[in-house]
Image 1 (spheres, rainbow, N blue to C red):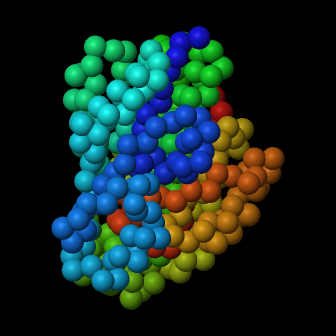
Image 2: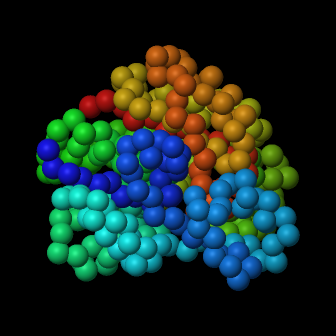
Length: 283
């Protein structure tokens, strides 16, 4: 069996213990806040970032990992005996992380494959987990890569934002429009389309938005068997657990699903209280 290593970045929303179980290496997404750069999973998580925001002078920005950061992970994997490295990055439509990984891989005379997941959050994490499981069950390098290419159409992700305030603060929405939406108690529902998070529906009140999100998820999965499922949240684990209970109608034997934080590289754009679900259907 080929010795392998799976590398991803922390926008994958993979819980640290789950990544460790499969030996998945995560390169931290950085957060620039008041002149200091924090690293997700090292000295920053969703709880801390929202604590820091309470006294921040300016709204934080994200910082993609440098090529050197990926090179360090690649070198560590090689020194540990990896013959093949598969690196799965957050969508290149939302971050330069993929470009950094490609630049790093080009400095090695080694079998390193860098893949643009065209996804983000736990959907990207599903790809890293599936790659690790495939290698462990004896799949070849080419089989793993081919399998990953076919996964994107089987991942269905939706999230509900309690407010548009944080999208506006991050510069991705007009502040006036966000204020009006919040006054009217409008809750947007997001999904991943063409490698980006897009608003696909809006509902009045959080309850209606959650109901609509589950309806959209049912339609998208079309009653297909479920291979993997997860709930993600931005600093609201109890809301995440409550959502998991509502999802048991998909396939009760999968419960409890993976429960994961969005992680700061994503949650500073969505804001605290955001909850979402991702389902990977079987082929």
